[in-house]
Length: 322
Image (cartoon, rainbow, N blue to C red; front, top):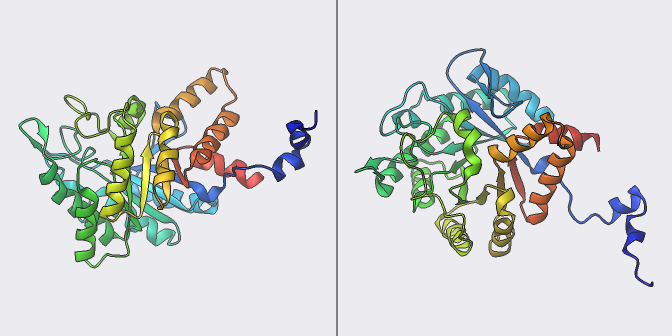
């Protein structure tokens, strides 16, 4: 045999030399939940190792996150009260607004991204304003824009609309620019599927819909071309980055968006993906550490520039060790 591919796998040094895909700490974005109170570090039962923080404990934790080399966090808020239109989502003293200000005071060089949506803030658990039992797309846009501007006023670096309303990127971009916050970026949840992998997140964010589901605004898992369309629409509307969510069941979509789009592409390694690995690891059915790194590498190999993951701190520790 003239061609023997195994020659390039013979030693660790050779394998490292010819490795096509590399994962680094700088690729990772850590996901955090913040709630009212002080000294709070409430474990999330369905996501071992993850907690709900209060503003003070999150600010403390932010120092460690940045010291580990992780460049950014995304913040999800659990408000002190909920109502039909999610008014606490844009309040100056809202939980996310407080958290952003506290983290940026404590760790100015940590990039802070905020989730922009209404599901955590509405008493019905849906991602927008309801009219006759359905989400009113255009009425929701104004509230999302107000929420994004309030986050910008608190000092956020980037907002990430996850609601999947039509036109929300354009509405948010216009509102930020009018408010003199043109330097605040938009990481759009451009390709977000109505997935069964979000279950643990709904416990963590306390945002389970009180009726129905979100299939009328999140994407049908069967559709791929529609995902490309969604991403390109968000690019036209002014997004700075686009995201695919979830990651593992949609590696093909990460690749499609990477091929179709010139912007940075992010992928969200969601709560259900995290929880499955943790559960199997607890049962000693898998080597959780190796599976974690293989999963993250597969997301990067598919074409993601950035990975939002609850594994960020564990992975950062391993990557720093080389």
